[in-house]
Length: 112
Image 1 (cartoon, helix red, strand yellow):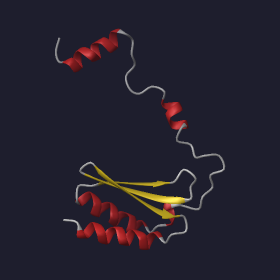
Image 2 (image 1 turned 45 degrees about the vertical axis):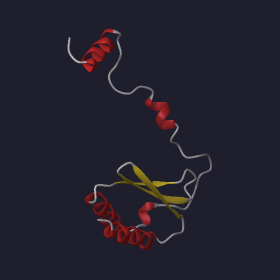
Image 3 (image 1 turned 180 degrees about the vertical axis):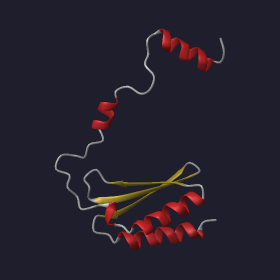
Image 4 (image 1 turned 30 degrees about the horizontal axis):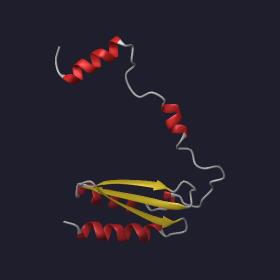
């Protein structure tokens, strides 16, 4: 019949299993901000060129980068993943994101 994967897929089809994820509605609902979360953090206030420079520098070095906000919306978060290691950086809602991103860019440019 083929590989273990193929056998597992065939078994799922016979049992009427649907392709893809299920229960996505509840997963997405869990991502909703906490009630009353109205923080001041907004990545939209950063210079798009600074964001692009950090993304380019990180990916050029084989890193994965993600931008986020805290659950209460009061802080900016930036995660860098490199060979299984994760560094989470946090900046308060009133931070000058262009200055903070410049610091991250200087660091990334120093990494070989």
